[in-house]
Image (cartoon, rainbow, N blue to C red; front, side, top):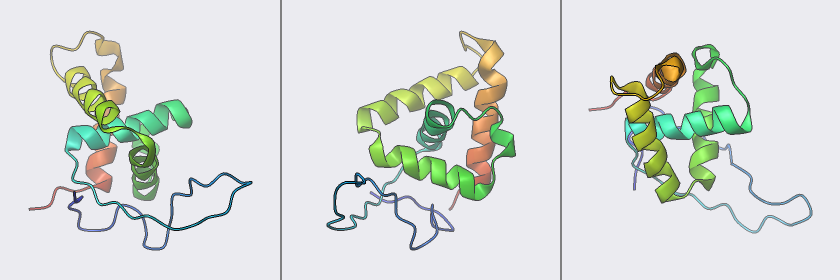
Length: 120
């Protein structure tokens, strides 16, 4: 799978290190993914909310958004990613159960659009 971007998701040379401090790095494994806008939003929202407690996605830099996406995509299962994408799409839509969170969901989508401009 491939993420089609004008720029790499994270700067070349950056590695999401998943090796425990007491263990020794054996290799660097590169995975290329093709993801939808909703999947990217789910990945960014997951890391921003659960891992870092970010309150305002609009304040994130492009580099921070890309880093959050890479962080989540490195550890989320395909099922978690798809469920998250469906939830994000639903929460962003007019039929959302809780419209009080829509400002946050829309801010995540704006952050994704800044960091990952759609390619042809």
